[in-house]
Amino acid sequence: EIVLTQSPATLSLSPGERATLSCRASQYVARSLAWYQHKPGQPPRLLIYDTSNRATGIPARFSGSGSGTDFTLTVSSLEPDDFAVYYCQHGNSRLFTFGPGTKVDLK
Amino acid sequence: QVQLVESGGDVVQPGMSLRLSCVASGIIFSSHGMHWVRQAPGKGLDWVSFIYSDGSNQFYADSVKGRFTISRDDATNTVYLQMNSLRVEDTAVYYCTRDRAKAFLDSWGQGTLVTVSS
Image (cartoon, rainbow over all chains, first blue to last red; front, side, top):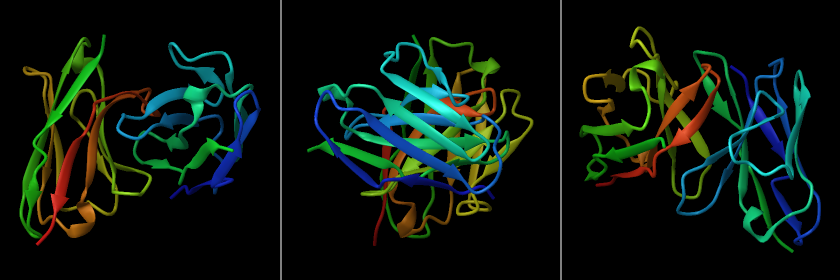
């Protein structure tokens, strides 16, 4: 079973700052990693799939990188709407797992 | 556009059963695998179950295996989650989601709340 860990648990930043979120897999997952944004009272939203592909309608300030076991989600310049919880996720056709999440909150 | 609408959430006692439904529109339903994902109060996202587009395979998280069953009806664009022997720890918002490439989840419903309490 693949376990995903995310760091930091909380990231306190101001609008305009760069956010760097990490996700580490317990086993090799190639580039099969996705990122989601989740705000209270709303469903999660897919941001990035296959490590670095932005989903439809996702702004260019969101980018993903990495491979193997270490992955990064970067928000180049935080907008007020970006303060939320971010989850990484891996799926292998049979089992799917989410990381515990990183909360990006207002400094 | 894609719309997924869940229903069936309720307050039930431990040991009871419940069936969740999710109706899809704006997609060719039979072409897509479907998942259920849940979020317990104050916790993170927790994958529950996945059914292939042709219904040939179903997969479950260990925490629900043997108690929950996922199924689909392509005639009505509906995916179901039959939940038996419910436990307090099954309390959560349950989301229906569309699968892409058997790897990620690209569309989500608004969720339905299941509360298991005595």
